[in-house]
Length: 180
Image 1 (tube, rainbow, N blue to C red):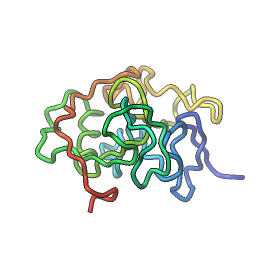
Image 2: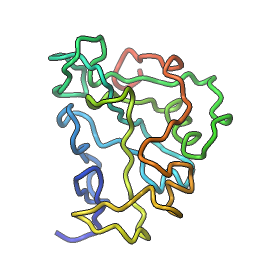
Image 3: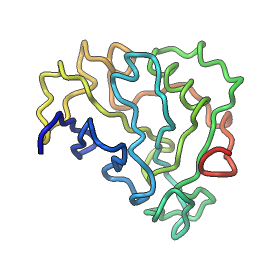
């Protein structure tokens, strides 16, 4: 194969591919595309798509389209494949960091899909596409996105555990997977 490759989330995807990249490590199977925000999107100030998240207590054995399976092991009402939208009246401009503001607007415009079972409440995965990252050596290493002077760090995400300041009680469950 030829072309430009980018490493992310433990997988390698063709940046010129057909758009059906699958989130590596996800529990929902092939129904949900890889909707992780890119460094270049944070830098540009726009994430033009819905975002996948991981949730601690996904129900066991049930899921919604576009998910095609689940790795849920909880007894709650959350199902992988659910799509949520942040209240459009929430004040994104008041958030502390550029990364939080950009993420906030995308969550208002496009929402987020429950794409995996994970620990610690709601978790987002981000991708690196910063070709200036000296730690970037696909396929083995996607880079060090939180390095000092890097795109994510300059946007306010200098650690792997960033608190974006977006309250969960400001989200609503959409009736359908596509928001219609």
